[in-house]
Length: 177
Ligand SMILES: [Zn+2]
Ligand SMILES: [Zn+2]
Image (tube, rainbow, N blue to C red; front, top):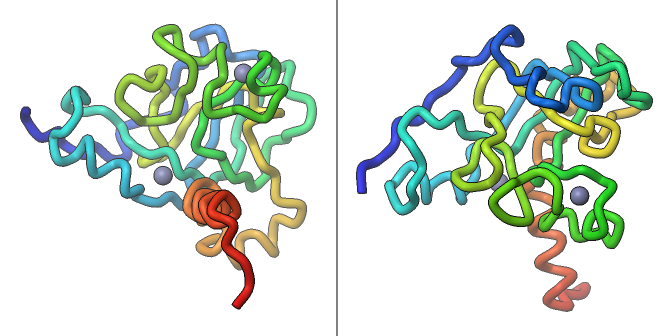
């Protein structure tokens, strides 16, 4: 299987799919920081059916530059972390906290992510801009903009690395000592 080419920074806010039915609940974000995930390696090294040119990136920390008309709790200028699962926040699974298998964001199967093969087609965040649907549910707003920007590289761990590790530790019953 051919290796895919990692594509960075092709997006502008003008060509993001705000017209795809998520304009009202979605937000356009300008990327401040992102990570390359270990799971991106599966696509980069050709172990998946990812098409060439796929914009990767599901570990996104950003500034909100546009918000749809139905976005209530997120404002332009907010500094936000984007959890790596794309979710609706309103289906049965999301309400049970099983956001990894949201029923409304991937026509092919439950569960979706940004910039990942067969995960709903959401454009990834290893780019200049990204569109996030259901912004009120998907975005974690940092309460203090200046404080967040000072610690932005630490906060970038919140979208995947830190919670994934924490979940693993809790699930394994890891304790002190
Ligand atoms: Zn990741
Ligand atoms: Zn859902």
